[in-house]
Length: 344
Image (cartoon, rainbow, N blue to C red; front, top):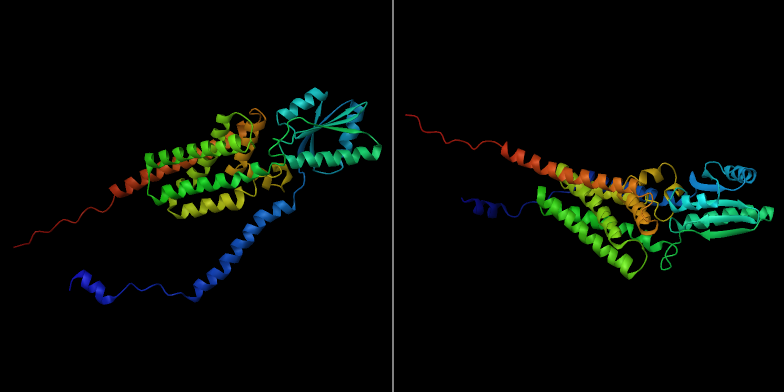
């Protein structure tokens, strides 16, 4: 009987039978994943508060000492930086060394903020400084040194850009993996798609919505690098461990990278060590780099740029390594069986 006839005789392949173990696995795994996702997203949001938030203080020594002592009463909330005068404090805000600065002057207090760095932090500083000054009857004047764009004063659009970039990177890495692209072709597909994502994202965010206002091409580079960091990581791990790498990397980026990014507030507003951990992941590093590029002329951009470049380099390196290992496996496969000649 031929192979086809045998297959027909046997009928369609039997489907695997569900067992009680499968049911138990579903009942256990799904709630655990739901609880993990809820913890990752809700816990940082529920514990939002300043943790060693960099804040400048300037003015006469006696007055500045008294103000610093008052701020230190909120243990662990602020990391105080002292400056000689208002000009030095303003420069520190513009360089992203501090989120704001309190300047004590004879006529009252001048609060320097940077809503472009974090509208939430700027609002928090204004509330806390105003409350403390009201107790002494001291007038407070607030100056927004680096203001958020008029089209996005609360930073909502910038916050919303993190998830689409992560999804674009995950999609690119998954498609490269499922299409079986390896080596140079995979690297070209990942970098090319990331470049197009950067151009499209900048066209929307800068040219259309006006929510980022820096150098157009620099912003396009940031968007592209953020997408490439995720896409390369997804494809790289998949090249080494198989298609499961797509799910693993996507889960890490979505469950931890996105909620730990601090883009809606600031890394120092998240519980420790979540804020610091988030800055070592593509969403957090991408958001910080975009703020520096779009609003601060590149100030404090080196760290997040190196983080994204590191993810991209490691991911692309893993893609190349996976292709090489695959070739070696094929070459070292079992040799074809030789036909034995009859004896006699």
